[in-house]
Structures are given as structure tokens and as C-alpha cells.
Image 1 (cartoon, protein in one colour):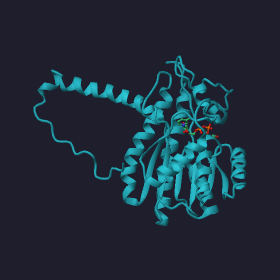
Image 2: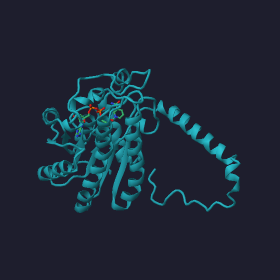
Image 3: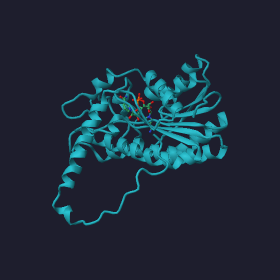
Image 4: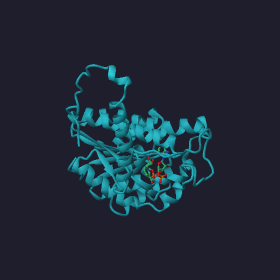
Length: 298
Ligand SMILES: NC(=O)c1ccc[n+]([C@@H]2O[C@H](COP(=O)([O-])OP(=O)(O)OC[C@H]3O[C@@H](n4cnc5c(N)ncnc54)[C@H](O)[C@@H]3O)[C@@H](O)[C@H]2O)c1
């Protein structure tokens, strides 16, 4: 997507942090912005703040974990601005902890918001973008935790790996429809993610007291790293340039390249072990693999 001016962006979790950073960045490019958030008051305050920069912004309430609510918010956005061209499936929460301490409701909450929320966003908006025929772009917020996982962060990483995996497949399916797709994998960004239980729905146990370490890996303090992270407005600017360039993977912290390479090295070692495996020696002829698939964006 090259041309942003006069088009409309729909951003979930747009009231705070990375979502607000993207809203501001795309607004500065001349887009109308829909701030879709579970916290409508915060969404309205964000829309007002954007209006002081002459950005046309409207807040709508959404719970991304509720498919019907996503559809309703989409229709409200279309009633306000006509057509939606850019969708940022960005709302997300964090929880985790030592093995055996993550409750069933914690798992349900994080899977429903971080994973199914992205499914609902893509499944709701793709037909709506197709219907206006002007093309568009989808940005799914995963995390660098969608490529490397740490002890204590299993629920978070499980959902973020899923967002990366789904995005890699959808990018191939959407390319022939003139809809681009990027998956945002930020490193640490200075946001309120460590306090994400402030928006926890009643069906998952309701709002929880703020626990800065609520998704800390054993022995590390993620909340401190988040507090020392980069400014969300820088992430917004990075997303604008990557969407314009049609990039599939959007990274914000080049230092994590080495961490990802470390994981790849362990995976390569696993393949070396398979290549030397006596058990696999009995396979006489492997059928050739067709790879990469034809519609693979870079
Ligand atoms: N902050 C980081 O270091 C970091 C790093 C990598 C990825 N991320 C991801 O970035 C995304 C945005 O998080 P953030 O860091 O800006 O945190 P944040 O808490 O500042 O913002 C998240 C926003 O999502 C909203 N939200 C929460 N649950 C919702 C729901 N069910 N429906 C709709 N809105 C909901 C919140 O009200 C809030 O406005 C998340 O997906 C997060 O996992 C954050």
C-alpha cells in the first residue's frame, strides 16, 4: 500500500501504546483513524489527542475476543468513514509464570484476545476490503516473542508464534486479492502491556490488580525491560515505512537478530541429527518438496 491520504485505518488496541503510536503515524500520513479499543473512554481521549494534530479520528468500542463485537465495530467504522483500507490487529494482553501457576482462565483470556482476536479481525475485514475493490493492507501485531520463547512466557509466546504462523499463510492467500499483510514483531516498547489485566473482561475473571511482573519469565523482569523500551511513536513510524515497502516481517529492534539466529542454529542442529539418524536411514526415497510456494511475499 503506497498511498495513505484520505484512506481509513482501523486499529485495535488503539487507545494506548503501540496501537496509539500506529494511529498517530498513519494519521500524520493523512489517513482517517478508527481507534477501536475495549476501553472506550481511553479511546475517546486518544481520538481527541489526535484531533489536536488535525487527524480525523473516531473511537469505537471493541472486544477483539468476541467475533460479533468485532463485526459491530467494523460496521460502526464503515458508517463513520465509508471504507476501511488498513486494519491493525494489535490489541493484546500478557500473562504467564512458572509451570502450574497459569490458570485455565488465564489461558482462555490470552488465547481469545491475542490469537482468536487476530483471526476475527482478519476474517471480518478481508471481505469488507475486497468489497470496495481499492485494495488494502493488514498489520497483525505479534512480538519478537513470536519467534523466540522464554521460560515463563509460554502463554504469551504460544499466541504470538500463532500470529506469525497465521500471518505467513494469510500473506500468500491475500496477495492475489491486492491486500498486503505484515506481521509486526516488536522488541520492548514503552507501553502499559505489563498492566494489561486492567482491561480483563469479567468472563475471564475481571480486572486484576496491577502486577508489573504478571508475565515475567522466571528470573527476569519483563516489566522493567518494557519500561526501558523504545517510544511507541517510533514503532508507528517504522510500521508506516514497512507497509509502504510491502514488508512481511516488521522488526523494531535489530539486536534480536542474534537471538533469533541462536534459535535457528538449534533448529539446524536438530536437522543435522536427523540427517545422521540410523532410524531414518531406512527411508529410501524422499518425494521432492515444492518450496517456496508461488505467492511468497518477502
Ligand atoms: N510493549 C511491548 O514491549 C510489546 C512488544 C511486543 C509486542 N507487543 C504487542 O503490542 C500490542 C499492543 O500492546 P501495547 O504494548 O501497546 O500495550 P498497551 O497495554 O499499552 O495497549 C494495549 C491496548 O489494547 C487494549 N485491549 C486489551 N484487551 C482488549 C480487547 N479484548 N479488545 C480490544 N482492546 C483490548 C487495551 O485497552 C489497550 O488500550 C499487543 O499485542 C502486545 O502483545 C508489545
